[in-house]
Length: 296
Length: 320
Image (cartoon, rainbow over all chains, first blue to last red; front, side, top):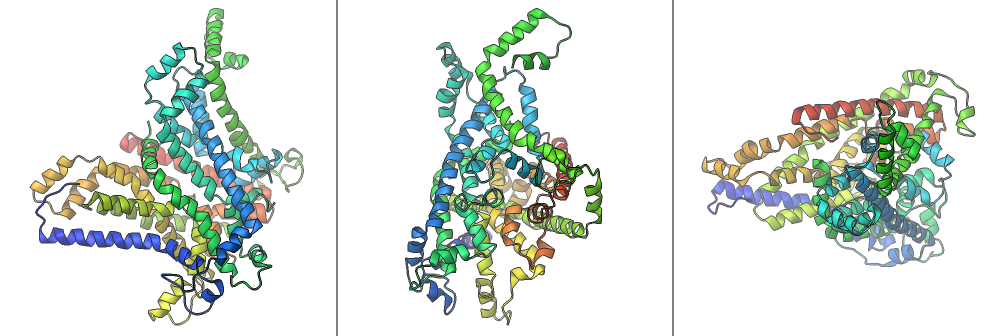
């Protein structure tokens, strides 16, 4: 930040200790992830015997992954997760941005009323059971739509869009209007393309939420063909109902995998997409988060 | 839509010309109105309509059939909240975990941001930020899975502690209620401290460098600069965030606790949100669960509004 070239002895030690402290923090943050990675590449039965494996695989094996990738249940769950993340995010971003654009226009009649209705949603919502009963009455239980429709709009995200849209110079829209474009096509053709940073931010946040959420699957679906991978893992990990995993190892009696090693491999393939996508999106979300938190 | 326009617009006296011009204005912005009204329709369908189901808190509804036909029981479910022995435990767990998370977890991101700001290499600073934000993006299922395996009898924690000779026998951490709060609080801090620091990092970045230069000329040490320049400059941000976290004290981390809780540690792990879920879905006491959920929702609403008006008064800025 501020560089004075002559550092006193004390300052020098301060800097060194600070760097060491930060390195320790980074290690503590990364190590659990490393541990899972290493163990997922280790032979399952080998991991059961002898001490724990801390740094590198003791007996390297790809078998856990072979089983995970050839298991129909896990792959179906993965497919559900991928599709709900893609479809859900596209719809959420487009729909929320569209409503936000309408509300960003000062001349919109009843704008105050719409804003009040939205603000209320931030403070109070129906308790769990009434909400569950309503979803049931709408016929959304055990449907793929349960992942999409109730999550396609968020007033909190709308505020972030709104703050951003207000900064767009009016001139852009005026020009299009003179050319006879209607408000919807102005939104699609002009406003969305110039709002890429905020679109990316909301897409990232919602995408991560869709990818990581397990509770919608736990509460609203019973069908194993509809459960996302996180719900699958929740059932395996927290309820220790390892039947599903044992089912996965079945037919592979000669193999040297265990339910634990398969669990770890599944955790890795569930996490890798996030870790890979995240650094690319990082530059957007820091800015986007600022817009949202500092409020217009 | 046109009828709607007529009702909503306040008019002192019937004025046909004015009415026609309002209608014309509405028609002129019909595309915008449709875009906005789709959002309103979503809110009505997925946010306001489910609130109708709150009436079951005043009825005896057992989950089958139409809510309308269930018999009314008045305030009975609300009375039984006070007679419910579990309630005390549940409230204690909720407030205990939230308060400890606040006391221990709140200052950590601030301290972290202060020290991060003192790093001389901007590159290293960025790398540390990237790494420490990462756990925020991992799901609680994954972290819960790691924790459960680390805290097991042949897990990492027991292996290390026995290796160091600190314990003789392996401890079943998740099966002993007394460890539960510690596990929940520590793992939450681990996951979120980096991410929570973002906002302070941004606030620090906007401090004028001249302040630091002036302090350096006056002979301030690094600690003194942190204490007398950086910290006072971000105290507005700190107070807003503090007030808002106090306001949401009743919201425990549902996703986290649902993964980590089990039947053995229930006495320390059952918080309000979990209790509402378990009595409702698992025990099928729909009406009672709705009553507990409603009371919690109203108290949380009150706290949030209170917190919001506090931060408004203090900083002339608030969330809403």
